[in-house]
Image 1: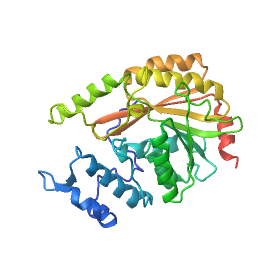
Image 2: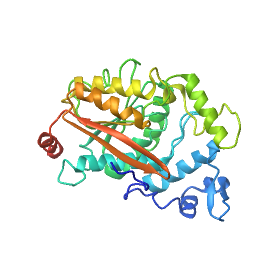
Image 3: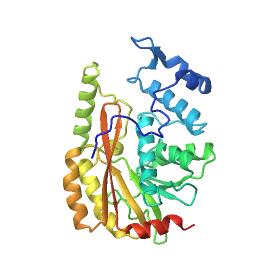
Length: 306
């Protein structure tokens, strides 16, 4: 694995933000712009409202999303990193399709924990025309995502996971088939750990102790019993029950030290193909784990079927 330092070559944000272009498309952003010490236009990334305005401008300018809003205190994700995950997923499918990215509505993608922001389906549908199903356990998140979906006249399917013990059960029906699943799992193992992480973030930003979360976030978005490791371990174990119904299961893995134990669990589920794909956003290196129970020739066949 080579650590990457740049965003994906197809990422529209790899050269930074063009604020002149963004403000032209989304004038509300101008009120949040400021100059950095090098006299470049930027925003205060510690200001949640500024980040929301930036996200709205990016989604409108680059992904044809006219309406985007989320309830107060919900996760407001940085767009470039989310875009990278989508492009690397496209490359994952291309590797099974003679290096050609499969586009269009017949490519079905399942977003686990889609959140109120619905960012992955918005980007993936705009960039590749894929059909998304977004799943979340939080009814408020589903309602907000549905509003984004309807007001933009999109065809994203939304489902509520009613059982916190399950990830794919109750979501993937007996006749469903997905080419991809994706997930940005809860990071922390408890509310206390999430609050501690928040305090550390704000201290690093020079704001001392604060209960406010940088970019927001609800409990279910930030923590779950067992944290990231517990959540992904459950996801892997449950995925084996749907082995014939998905080409590639994938999830972001924030903590590098979780990779080895997760690979061990994948060995027990008899996954045929396991990949770790490195990504980057500035100085931060991230990655996702991908696994399949379907062999490559069968995957290739599935990608050519309409």
